Image 1: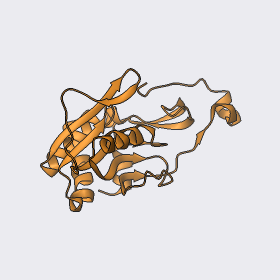
Image 2: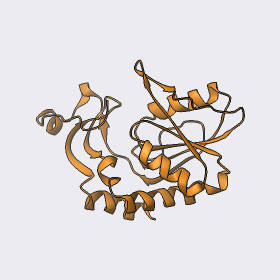
Image 3: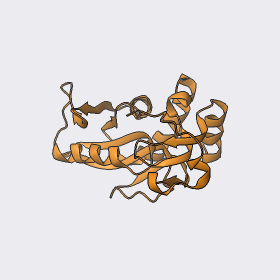
Image 4: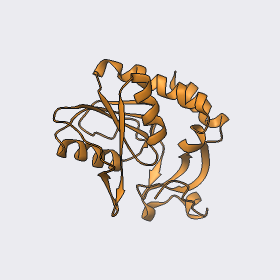
Length: 188
């Protein structure tokens, strides 16, 4: 699957939104990738999951881990396509944590899968959790890399869509965004 084909799926499903959005990172943007809309149809989930799995298959992953909520659907499908275990981290007292009895073995070969990465904060939290449990982070895979490769998490990164989407700090909005009411369509 090419990046253009993936973007086309976002457009066809109404998952590429235009306007004024506040991202989880706190930055503001004219575009928002609402992966939940793109991933509500299982044939699309399967296509995206297969495309990501094909990019990372050579890593030898034994477990896929995703941050909840956004990464759950695509993370589980990538794990299914690879034939490996799937676990997730979720918020506990405002921070991500490994819960529900999930365990990570020392040196376990782990791939982190997320839906969208802008600054990489939730992925970095997930990396830290895996490493705190002595797991081996082989890489990070995502549907959309909004940084166009600018985010460096210290491990190999793989994406279906990699593009630079303008993002602005709240105190440095361009005039058009200052005049447009902001929406926060993502998760908190």
